[in-house]
Amino acid sequence: MKLSEFKSLLPNQEVEFGEEIAGDEVFRLMVKLAQEQSETLDPASYVHHEWVESAPDQYRLKVKNITGSPIYVAMGDANE
Image 1 (tube, rainbow, N blue to C red):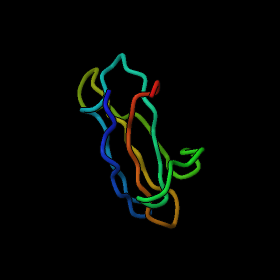
Image 2: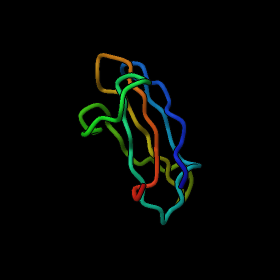
Image 3: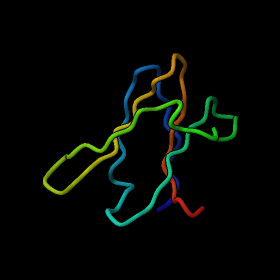
Image 4: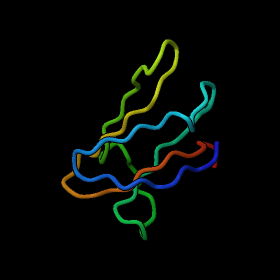
């Protein structure tokens, strides 16, 4: 899996990742508080995420910004 582009999320805004994830891949969710900053150490403090079924046996990861500030999220390979 290659790193997806960081997507800007406003407070309470949601984004879905799906095409980037194959069923057998291990991934990591990355969060930045500003584009120029490095990734946060604990993405779960800034987003709520859940798997949603988009079709039978096909799932997408829905990510919601739970902070009061804009953030940036991306998906990448867990081994990189």
